[in-house]
Length: 272
Image (spheres, rainbow, N blue to C red):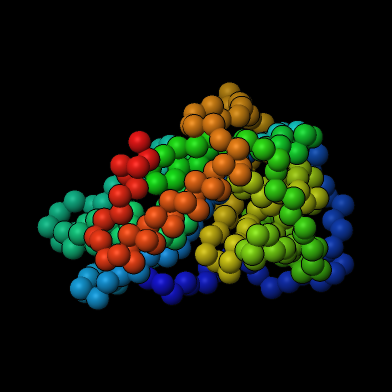
């Protein structure tokens, strides 16, 4: 399970440089983008469970929606698509067992991506602030502060994605390699999660060579309807520094417990 598989972003060959500046800019001030978020698991499968390794899921996938207007955006999971129930029947018993083992290994993992889940992210473009809820080891946090300042490097590569011209941009942020494909045709500095700050909306984003991928599946620029762009309110309020300190401390506890040879990390009790 340690081997990471590179995600195919399903983008065709690069377009000529003549398409770098496209006059067909869409002056949409609001809309919604549906995304599929995929995160590769990092947990290690013990040899005693080797017969289940090929049946364990290699990644988690979540359908999410990004709502945006000219000054704000918010992203959250799509409730009706967020949960996938395994098929029932005797032939699926091994698959359910493999899924149960995978969830157990994930809870005991010292990898941040196995333990953390972004639930909601609200960005104010004008103030440059972000408010987001994240679940970490079963505990929900409400984190507010400045939006990450990504030092994007604009490339010359162009492609077409979902009928829009997209341009490549790359950066390295806190040691993570990030590749984004944004469309100047939707001139909103938004993107999935806390990503953004480009001269166009990000439709595809890959972090650490496909370890985490956001890929747009549907674009609707007809308006927001009854949906509202509001910041999250649930969770224990912490600053970004406080949250990062908690994450570092708890992951170190898991590593220490694993190093001592104990079967189950005691973080659930210490979190309450």
